[in-house]
Image 1 (cartoon, rainbow, N blue to C red):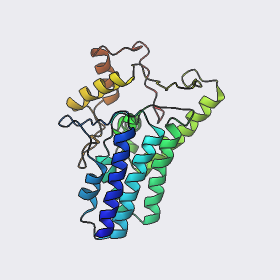
Image 2: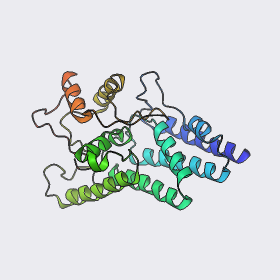
Image 3: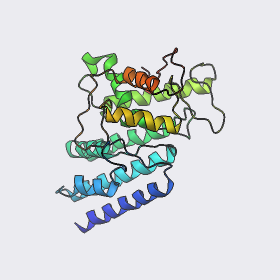
Length: 257
């Protein structure tokens, strides 16, 4: 148990890093002001694991993913890791150590592929962590994708493939929707503004109304793709008076839908 306590202490170190360096440490949980600390998640999800080595590995992975998210998305606003952590623990318990590490590597590659050090330069991970990318992926072909979860391998593979396609488009300089960006710019291919004050207001309103497909602030979240979340978000942004080009109704996303 001492080894696990040391792992929890390492997660507390990552919590302190986020406290110091994240521009905003917010949650989408309508009942709270702050996200669940990683150390608390580690204790809650791993404290009863009889496999100490696996528990230590999971704790290390959670810290790695959070630190990588800060590195690649330093402007990110919402930092709920509850459902992400619960999913990773489940994958670790249901698959071999090698398969688990491969799964984790996909998470880490995604962060680098779409974040501030790539030509794509998305500002936030909102659409990925809270399931809006996943909802669009599933609804394109619910017959084939209806049983695919938000962080299942088949979906992660699709997002990685789409990321490579988007990078090639940006680097070609020939695509109107994904042109190269000047230094300091963030990419927003959506019809509505996603500057921080609008991002906060819109997604808090959606969370309060139950219009987030993956409640990432819950370890026991039940992902749901059956509502038209993408359309409802666009409508809510317009109704809130968030600036945008609503006539275009653009909603290109990481998974290409």
